[in-house]
Image 1 (cartoon, rainbow, N blue to C red):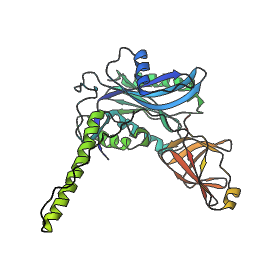
Image 2 (image 1 turned 180 degrees about the vertical axis):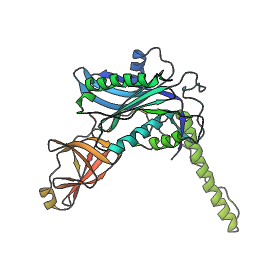
Image 3 (image 1 turned 120 degrees about the horizontal axis):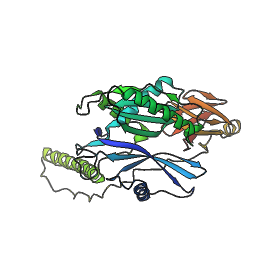
Image 4 (image 1 turned 135 degrees about the vertical axis):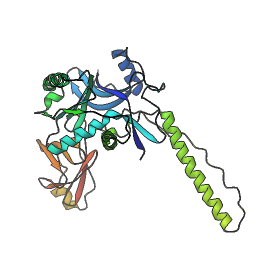
Length: 349
């Protein structure tokens, strides 16, 4: 896995309302964003958080990642050019790991509001059913008045959570302690670097890169060519060691450009359980298809959902009537009963 490099970038939450049947392509996203924010320069990255229905239409919430003003990287505006072989991510993602650590200490709280002041910037992260659904950054919280200003802003944020079409569905949000951090982003051995690496391994960020596609493609081709040359060298050395004469080998295959897809992806949606073939006819009779819908998975540790009309929060090893939770994976839960197994995918709200 490629190492991670933190780059200077701003993150905000953007909501887009479309028709219920309208599909969103990456080029459409940029067009809609330019319509809403014509003054914003640069080419942003969009990262899908959640979609849900409302009376106004289908609401989509994205993280918008923008290079900071004054960046030296003229191509995309995401800070200095990335070191070769490194995966570039916003350095502020180290806060995601800190928020996750706080949630782990409470376990049962999937609806959580985290806040921190880092170098005078107030960051607010909101998790709904264990999934990140809001990120905001606001400057101007330096000095002695910074704490009072932040507490006032967080009080208004909590009122927003009670009125928001999505967050108001939660019975309660837990508010984490306001953290005050001074991060030395120049020091490559600072604590935030370790926390950024931990956050980068979370399944939510899988596939997110800020380095350009051209740079990623060149790195992949260089790696493939390296292994081809190493393999050819081994063949030549074995031939010489055997006393033979080195003969030209077959021409190297023409390499095609690795396929790359758009960063923003709709989460896979499947609200019905997919059952594997039972080992015996009796198992299918005693253990019918489970009536369950997965609504959220927290760090491959526990999940929440609706089972037989009731809300449940379970982890691996727990029981659901005659079913046992065999495992909680990144995007699915495996149930077993009577020798048969069922995979239930995590559905989007």
